[in-house]
Amino acid sequence: MTDRSVAVLAGGLSHERDVSLRSGRRVSAALRSVGLTVAEWDADASLLTRLREHRPDAVMIALHGGEGENGSIQTILELLGIPYVGSDSDACRRAWDKPSAKAELARAGLLTPDWVVLPHSTFRELGARPVLDAMVERLGLPMMLKPDQGGSALGAQVVRAAADLPTAMVGCLAYSDTVLAERFVAGVEVAVTVVEGPDGPEALPAVEIAAETGVYDYTARYTAGLTTFHTPARLDAPTAAAVADLAVSAHRLLGLRDVSRTDAIVDADGAVHFLEVNLSPGLTETSLVPMAIEAAGRSFGAIYAGLVDRAITRVR
Image (cartoon, rainbow, N blue to C red; front, top):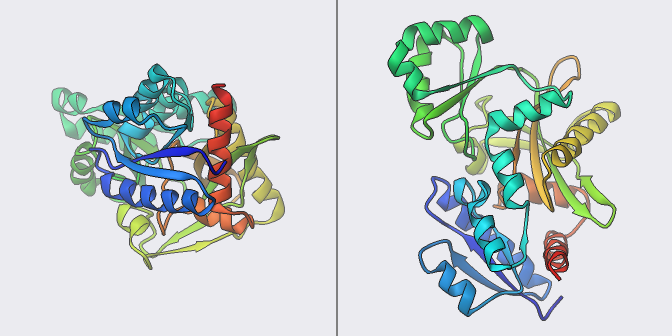
């Protein structure tokens, strides 16, 4: 492994650029710590030239948001025949769209909060108030609003009063032309990292998330001290097993590869509800994947070096 070169792609132009750069720096340091040669590259207009002229043995995608998770950068790497860590372009496109992923998992029998999806044009053409009233009638309050695509909880918020819905909708639509509205499920929020190894996908210990504000939004995610994490999550054994099963099932049903992170809610009755899956999860100092790896007693650098090795082996 020590003679292999890895290009870590980070940055880009999405709303999550700063988080991506932090993830890129951290995973680069981890890969260097186990002896790999690492270059850190931004995803800009020079990227294809760099990939052709300084072709790495593999690429590690630390891009968050559309560029790193909607299948576009994966398609470019597939066109060039360059191995990369993560799900292939088809799986990315399938999982990146939150409503599509929810629908596919619901058809397979997994629990997920009831939802509706509406584009901005519907509110404009039919009038915001009657549409919002219909949403409340269907989903009730409180209600969870989030962009249909995107990560880091940008634009996501809990709405507890009907009077707050219009403002919340504007904030959500600032990040996407389509809003995903979900029935709010109260409970314990958990994140489960799935990593593939020789024996297939394995769920690492779940991370329990307790945000001071009660909402794990962008600020709570990336500001140290605003959220308390418990790893492993404070769940009884049967519930912990159900959480792990849900994450592995989501990984498999959506055709994901190498690594993913599933976010879920455990309600008061112990039922586990799928929220969304992350294809290029954050790797910063406050991110959940490194916490899960540490709780499993494993090495961050060794796990990602192993994923690099898997990527290279796939295209031999």
